[in-house]
Length: 461
Image 1 (cartoon, rainbow, N blue to C red):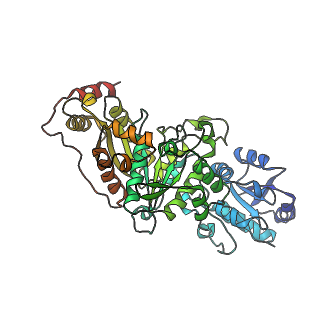
Image 2: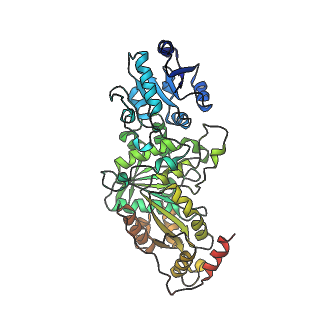
Image 3: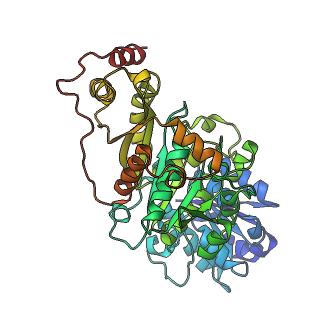
């Protein structure tokens, strides 16, 4: 089988001459002049391997993703910033390698399976038949094109709680302001109050609001800074700490990666970079709480521009990497059907995450006199099988007071019922075991409620 190779840089020419004299399975199909030409060759399907002697300083995680989309492996001749390139998943060709040795390395890399994001930081040599561990230095690149499929394959042992790492708690809900931000913020605060080391991440690429909710006047888009370092392969635990802002809440502290300061900056938060940030965060914190946007669509995939960033990829990646996924829906005739309709999609996005379904803003005016029983009855009739794990009361006074003061509920409304409900949810979300707690029972109560009738009509559309 012939393996097509494209090269970049005059430093590869001596090796190319040696390879061509062998007349073996490796064929150099083009000597590119710059990185953009190499990317074009990769997208056209012309090559399976790219060999670089120049332009390595321009390689980022995002560019490597695009090459990975076309099933192109990357090798770089030694002499560049090998530490950074290794962190990005680039295979390093040892100094002084002969043409025969490079051919063998190309064959091994070309035949190796596509590495998974969960293998980031491991050597490709582990998956190359006959490759010496000291001859190949690499780490697995990720694929921004489909963060669901890639991240969801993370080893199940990573989610079992057996490792000495933290847990990622992602808060998601459909459109319609179900309360994602206030829930994420207060879940993080309650975990911090129990003594856990907590990082709160604002990954909402449409309407970041964590910093404003905490009254932080000097926003610096900490998540964008962390993603920039991750994209360059330079993010470590210390770098993550520098990007985060420490905030005092109710006598305790938590770290915050603030969101985008302008909505048009969303291309700065790419899936591969965010995955790297979350991996680092999981290793440095006991709990990582992520606030996301509403959209689970991957509509950007229809774009003709292969290297276009994807606005919804941050939400998809945050959900796919979650150990616990808190799913919010508003307790009304619009919010609950929206949640019912999106739960199957969410199960595809995060098949390994533990879902905690929460019905928020429970109030008599929106669900009828029976309250929680009406919600439970309607949910039992129309939901796709997952029960309700918790309900939150509607307390606009406490929420408004907290927002005005730039505080969390533990500070502005410490004795409120809503605060207590969120604290209970936070404790459940952090526990690694799969605890099954039945939601409000509808047996014998509120049969055929108005809410259920409205939901049935809505879902039959």
